Length: 81
Image (cartoon, rainbow, N blue to C red; front, side, top):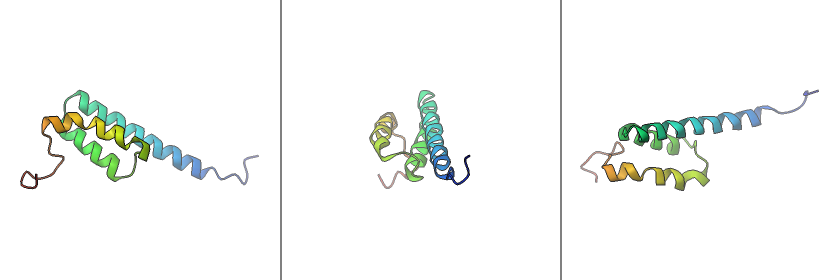
């Protein structure tokens, strides 16, 4: 009955969304523990790997406000800033 149906595309889309949700939950876990270095790595990973839908970029950047206030470096050497 399912012969001829292309189920690979929806499955790939589901896996991509699941990866995003997992990374996003991990980001909030780091923020709750005030582990700002790990949270910064999560944000960079989410945005650089293209896991987040574009409609979520503003939300993720808003989530980064505690990191900015804490002075987290996001892996950027001090001499650049």
